[in-house]
Image 1 (cartoon, rainbow, N blue to C red):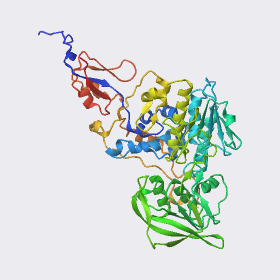
Image 2 (image 1 turned 60 degrees about the horizontal axis):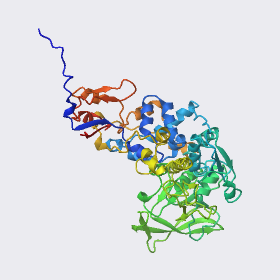
Image 3 (image 1 turned 180 degrees about the vertical axis):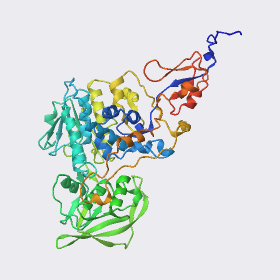
Image 4 (image 1 turned 90 degrees about the vertical axis):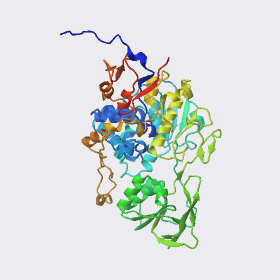
Length: 569
């Protein structure tokens, strides 16, 4: 028998190619939807592999408060998750909470950074925006001093969020971690009262993160009657441990998160809360999950209802005269404007009234060089104000008032300050670290590459770009929670942390959109045998001498981590 030992290696068929495959990690939509720019895909990949502490460390590069966010973030990342169009989105928020709580149980903390810079930075306000800025600047090597007007740190996290959503133990633990990093925090110091702009001349930059703590007025007769509270005032007293005496019936006016928090708190104080909102359920600005929980707990709602005046009997609140409303044309917010129905007056009995119409920033402390627009500190895209070396961010600069948006603003301010001090062109650098089109960026990329390029494409992968033949429907995990009949008895956290088993199961549902996870499909399906595993590390190598550019590798990639591009001739 004649046997040939020759091969066809001499015939380099790659010359036939006009399309060239290239491995390219793209941007998962969850990260693009996260204001803080967390590498969600990366942390879930590590979690699924049992590397919980590495997952935590990855999150902490972008976000100093994963335990807090795992409890109170409204998780816009989940709304962007491709899995949500396939069956149900990944429970990212619950997984972040699990990862952060697990790291705390193992006594893991961010190492104390070495102070490498001489330039001192002042942060005004120790809420989520201010502390986020201080955290990132400290990790960048700057000495930071935070000035806080209140006796304790935390800002709205402490005074505006009730313990059944965010326990004081969890909040205090994450705040203590920042102190352990060497951040100097001075409480009881208010700019314009016992701290002045002249005192800040020794600082290279100043970040204003004073929040929005002034409750809006009802602007109706009777709002000064004893028994009428302001929403934030009510929550602040409650969260500071002060005793609040409520009657049996409590009317809460408003449809935002403050109104929901007040109503659920009133339930736990053994009152009967009744929320009055001038639009419909669909127009409520409150987080939908929190509204659902309020309904389940027994909060009563009256929609298309607006207060006309507060009634009193013997000098105390006795009720509210209300008007029925109907929806008219959209206003500047895009929501349909509520219009009173003539002759629709009616009375709701109440022993207390809480006005929860939202909050506004107090800006009397501002230097005259700093511009104000629509009651907010005016800033550019990098949080810079009209005064040189002064930046601002959080609730005092935006009507989008959420914890994660405040954290993101502080993080971006830290980036802008570092670029300013080191004379690094932020505008030129931004495309290399940007995530999505909503202002998020990767601090990990900034620390890693500085000006050396970008390792991940800006393209955001959508569901149609995935090969769904390699995925199967899988049920989303359910979150354990306190029983309804237990909730009214205390201010214990309602939602509980999931188990490690459930966390691993849920992390395994992730599509890992746009990111190669070494599934070997390209290696197995390449008809030319031109793809090889890397000898070291992860990933694959394409032998372009023999690759014909047929595109089979791209078609069989479940996650769209391979791009076909025209061959240069």
